[in-house]
Image (tube, rainbow, N blue to C red; front, side):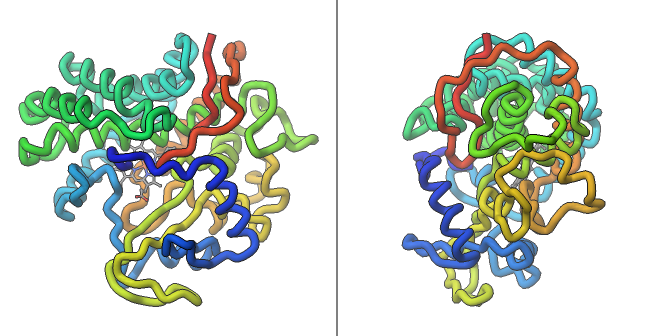
Length: 362
Ligand code: HEM
């Protein structure tokens, strides 16, 4: 995720891209990006066996510059180990309690709920400075990055928060966090917080909407489907990630000229795998815009056209954990009285992350 100006493609742009992908699965945009909305080709591109693409995610680019591969590897291993130590069921309990107790903005509630569940991994339970800094980061910087509230996140505040986090990070307050150059340690830590929380909170915002009676965004409920609360929780989680993938496109800069299917791509171009469009493409999904958790019942594996966590180098280290936790959240939320939720906007929030329209929890 970029902490620079938010590229405001917006909901209209995202749906326009979807319509183009349905007409033509592989094409070049006016801006020069190569869009790949063919499932087999998209997987091949992301796996990138010949190493022709750059897979460093935006959150491992402090100041816009990619960290060296060994540092990225150490950060990914730390994140992976931190999650492996968590129980998805228990983490879901923390998330559900926090959302149920929250009032006000849904996105803020989701961000704080997900962070509460990651408290041990992020060192928040033992270091009050980090706890305050992360809370301020979510409220003053990251919330606007997720909702698109402001064109530009507040850089000054972000860098002040990085500086505040740095000494605690350098002193080893975050269990297992790699030793980093102190000049970037605070920033990398807050970017790690964004990796832990951004997409998870967005998925949670969609799940809350799905479990709430009422209209869905850009989807309808299958008429004969069991209500979301009564369906198999893992299927609810997967169907939510299919229709509303928080990482709605996977973008990779091209390192070397080569061909992708019919397109020649050049160094400096971007390749884009539009997961939102792919996961609603009528070639791969019957009734693509219908929320039907039951469609997952017949499949043993995951369809090729399902890529919410990307695949290959750079893919999410939390894919397995997240599906388990989201499923547990779906089950635990459905077992509680419905949340009191009112919608404040008709359109979803589309920034680097795709999340539900603005809502208020009463
Ligand atoms: C529903 C929740 C989530 C979704 C949809 C998601 C999605 C993704 C995607 C699409 C990527 C690839 C980024 C890119 O293309 O540049 C990614 C990378 C990553 N994610 Fe997640 N993520 C989720 C939750 C999490 C959580 C909870 C963690 C905490 C450990 C996490 C840690 C990471 C890391 C460390 C990477 C970088 C992997 C690498 O560079 O090799 N993600 N995630």
